[in-house]
Each structure stands twice: as C-alpha cells, then as structure tokens.
Amino acid sequence: MSGYNAGNMTTADRILAQPELLRKNDAWRLDKDLMKQVLGRQGQLLRLASEEVRADPELVLTAVVTDGDALQFADESLWKNPRFVRSVLDVNGMLLHYAPESVRSSRDVLKAAVASSGEALQYASDELKADKTLVACAVQRHVTALDFAAESLRRDRSFLEPLMAKTPRVLGHASDKLRSDKDYMFSLIQKDENMLQYASDELRADRDFILKVVQIKGDAIRHAWHTLWEDHEVILAAAKQDPRAIRHAGKASWNNRDFVLGMVTKNWRDLRHASEKCRGDRDIARVAIKQDPQALQFVADELKEDPEIVYWAYQQDERAAEQYA
Image: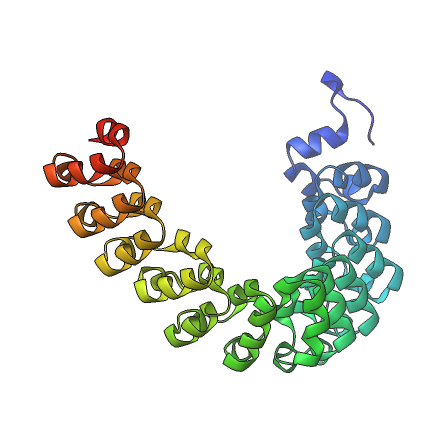
C-alpha cells in the first residue's frame, strides 16, 4: 500500500498532499502501517482514520506526539487503558482536557498530569483542586497552577508559605483577599521589599499603606502603583529611607518645586532630572550651584545668561562658570 507510484510519490505523500483521498479509500484507512506513516507526519488526519485505527493505542499516540489535539479523535475506549492514559500525559499533561470526567477525577491520573504540566490542574475535579499534595506538586511545576486551585488553598497561609519560601512568585497567584491583607503583606515586605509586587492592585495603590512601607523599605516604591510615582510626598519619603528610590519619581514629581528643591538640597546632580520649569527656578539653581558650580550645566538656558547666577557660579569656580554659562 505504501509503495511508490508514478513520480516517486508514496501513498503517504499523496494522502498528505490531498487528505480527502483518505476519506474515499477504506483500504488505506484500514492499513495500519500506512496510517502510522501518515499520522507520524500529520496527527490531525486521525479524524479521517478508520474506527480500528482510532482505537489503536500505538497509532493514536503516534498522532498525539505529532499533534496533541489529535487526541480528540481517539476512540473513548482508550481512556480505560491506564498505560495509554499515562503515555498521553507523558507527552503533555494538558491533554487531560480531552479526558472524560471519570478520568479527570482520578487522583493517580491527575498526579501524572500535573507532573508533566502544572496547569493541567484546571481540568481536575473540584475535590482534587483542594488536594494539598496534588496542588503543591502542580505549583512546584508551574506557579500559575495555583490560579486553578480551590479558593480555600489560595488563601491558606500555612499551605502557601512553604511554597513561597522556594518561589516567592507563588504569592502573586494567591487569593486577592490574602494579597489585600495589610498586616500580612506588611509582615512579608518587612523581610523582603520585593514582596510588594505581589500585593493586590488595590493595596499597591493605597497611599497610606505605601507611605508606611517606604518608611522602612524605600526602594519598594518601584513596586507601588505607578500613579504614586507622581506623588512627590511619597517619593520624598521613599528617598529619605533609600536614595535609590529617586529613580522612580514621575514627571509630576520633577515638576513640583518643593520636591525638586528637596532633592537638589541633598544632591545637586538631581537637578538634571527636573522639569524645564524647575530648572529655571532661581532659588533651586542657587541651592545647586552653592553645592557645586558645575550644576550650572543643568539650569535652564535663560539662567545661564542671567548675570547674577553666572556671577554666583564664577565666584566659586571660574572654569565651571566659563564652561557652562
């Protein structure tokens, strides 16, 4: 059946070129050797195979290895074959999607599925989604699997914390209620400021909570809701605890006179981040130049031509004044 014909094209080649030929030729559809060649190259053609082929574990697996979605055309009787089920899940645990409910309710089957792909947990029965051992196995494989676990586990601190100790990202898939718990999240952030990134959006946007956080972990501001980067009071509080926080200040902050003055008072180089309006502020310019005349390079162009400002810089460093005025 699979010999060469005119043009040195095999029967398998002809079928792959024109799949509809298979529908019209029962002999080909029953020929297991031929179908193995075909399915090994295009698994989806299992849909045109004979019932005998679709019930053959070896041939179906050949198709599934080529294209996992071919499994939808397999005979349902195969799901009663434990070896077949295990082989399918070894290929891809997500193929549990095609299994009947009776199979998805099997603890052994789910264990094999999540060992291959943690997210296969989404196809488990409600009872198994609440099984701590299986869910832990799934989460260790893929942290996103926690999204499909029972809500009771997604808010269970005693269950989550050992998983978080290995992979902090687990917290990002815990329940919103837990990630919105101010006391709990603060206790985690005290140990690791990066845990703020896994807090709920609501908590990351909570100004009072973030102010409390940045007073002990200034650079945690980078994980706060972006609107708070424009809040100069929050940024100032963060920078006071950790100077690195200043790099997260938004445009609104650098356009705020009090904020810029506070920053420049500590470090004249911060003037380079200020808005044109603030770089044209005479008081801010004086504060910066008093620290170092080289700050003249960052003031607005009109101040570089201001006799008083240039003279102020000239008194401290003639070369800097001549270079940047």
